Length: 302
Ligand SMILES: Nc1ncnc2c1ncn2[C@@H]1O[C@H](COP(=O)(O)OP(=O)(O)O)[C@@H](O)[C@H]1O
Ligand SMILES: [Mg+2]
Image 1 (tube, rainbow, N blue to C red):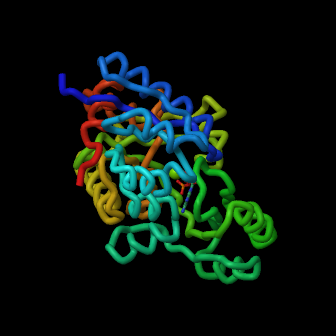
Image 2: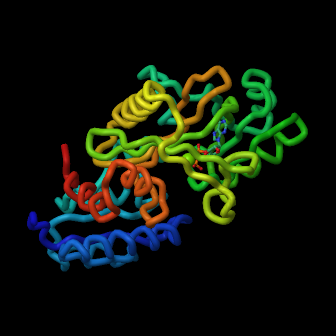
């Protein structure tokens, strides 16, 4: 086996997604251990600098979600320390965490993404709804886990939806895509098999993601071979347009007219044994342990 040296898995941290990060990190630690890697789990606390320097690590496996862990902050910190890490660099992480910036880059690169408007006051909602129609999707620019998202059906709910999203910072309104929902994992330079998500909820909301057991995951996704390739190519283009590297997961939806649209890129997606990237990897013949090692192999890629 390749000598990976001392590997630090960074997990936990202060973000709103701490709990899921703890689970993902524990699963990654377990997998690396089982493959004989000298792995050290570090729950990110204010003493992180001291621990990283004292630990004499060769590589860092980043299993942090959300603010400070997935937005370029810890990536910049590791660059300064000269420690190679898994996943995307500073810029791609920062852009992917910001849905407004991501969409601007995709529009400029010809990657289809739902039409949108940035809203800076409750008054802006009616104008956006006039242009984008109902139902209107209203979401925070920088959150995850479907937190703060509303599907607005008529003008009476605009103010409430704005407020809900604004609690998490800047607000984005998007044209509602009405067809099936997909996600496509990227590993190294290639797209893994596409997964289709199916929920009886109004959309793939927090409950559908983490609470209810009524969400169905289909892999293979049930697409014709050329459609599967189309989604994979689109996901890879979305990933590359933001300058992402290593691994990630692109969320997409299909409109009533059959066209696919990119919603967002997750640069450090969940890695519990029932998360989506491991599911796609399994369909490609990679065990959870194979997947974790492959992600580690790409650490520090240019
Ligand atoms: N434009 C849209 N049209 C229809 N549904 C959407 C749209 N944007 C988001 N959704 C629904 O909300 C969910 C979460 O949106 P997403 O942009 O992926 O943000 P998050 O970072 O919270 O996962 C999606 O999985 C989808 O079910
Ligand atoms: Mg999403």
